[in-house]
Amino acid sequence: MTDPGFEPRVVPLTRGRSLLVREMRTDDVDALLDLYARLGAEDRYRRFFSSGVPPRAWIERMVALPDRGGFGLVVHAADDGAGDASGPAGATPSAPLVAEATYALLDNGDGELAITVAPGWRGWLGAYLLDVLLEVAAERGIPNLEADILTTNRSMLALARSRGYVTTSHDGWNIVRVMIGAADREPHWPGPHDRPRILVEAPGGRWVHEGAARAAGLQVVVCPGPTSRRRPCPAMTGEPCSLAAGADAVVVAHPLSDWPDLVSAHRAVHPEVPVCLQPRRGDEAVPDVVRLAPADEDAVVTFLRHLAAGDAEPDPGLGGSLDPR
Ligand SMILES: CC(C)(COP(=O)(O)OP(=O)(O)OC[C@H]1O[C@@H](n2cnc3c(N)ncnc32)[C@H](O)[C@@H]1OP(=O)(O)O)[C@@H](O)C(=O)NCCC(=O)NCCS
Image 1 (cartoon, rainbow, N blue to C red):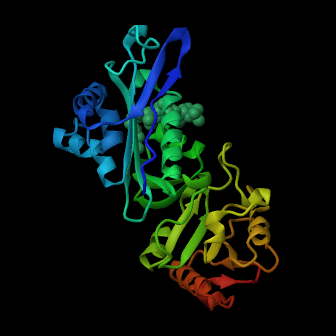
Image 2 (spheres, rainbow, N blue to C red; image 1 turned 180 degrees about the horizontal axis):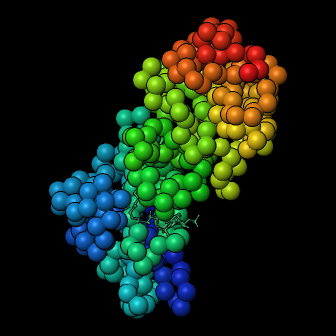
């Protein structure tokens, strides 16, 4: 694939200052070491899952990401508006780095994203850099960017949520793996369709049966529902949803009181994809919609495997029933 290159961008700030955003280079190692050394230990832990400054060899490998299909950005800004005569104040290539953002190419064709913004520059720069990464990834045919995020990292979770994330796994209660759509800004199924695909709509992007379903060989993506202001749920607006269209079955595990039209929206937009309901306490029956019996995890997973394979009859013994409970 031809690399279209990345033109440096100057971001104007107030009082005539600006930031310079440019592609990461192999001679950025010292400046990146300096950026990471200036972070607090907690920020480093959030970025690297280790509170120390990463070893030089690790950063040398990071700046060489483009050799392996990845991409990186750095951001320069001068302290207190200091600049030089050759450009807007602050936008000097010799000024310290205040941020970096990268993605590494994964085996499944997605990019693994990471972002650091120095404390004094937070509030909008993370979102700006994430948008540039998504733009570059989309130009290069990368469907999604993914990241492991500590569940305590509220800022990164807020950032991912604002761009409409779905989750692809959880490591206990500590780490969540999120996926954000790059191509046309919609999340897409990652990798080859070599396992039955189940799209689950569940609060917070966490589904009670996801561990068992994945262990049983199902590919599960969990959508936290129509939560992002910037990326409204396509199905709810009558538009095709790439994840639902590519799923072998959809499970709605949101309380119907939150999204009363979600089941009918999926059935209307993708009538060929079976939709089940995992009812919550007080949920009314939806005519002709299979209701999962959530108490029996093995039965639910077995039922979904049959449903995804197209050979499931609604059967209470298999965890799915058309009868209201
Ligand atoms: C994650 C990071 C890049 C985000 O930078 P940023 O977007 O410029 O700015 P902030 O940190 O202020 O985060 C912005 C969002 O988080 C929200 N946020 C910040 N602190 C929060 C908290 N304690 N609880 C909930 N939301 C919070 C902000 O309201 C904002 O969301 P909004 O735009 O919807 O209002 C930056 O915080 C950082 O570098 N952290 C350390 C390294 C890191 O965690 N990297 C991510 C690893 S993948």
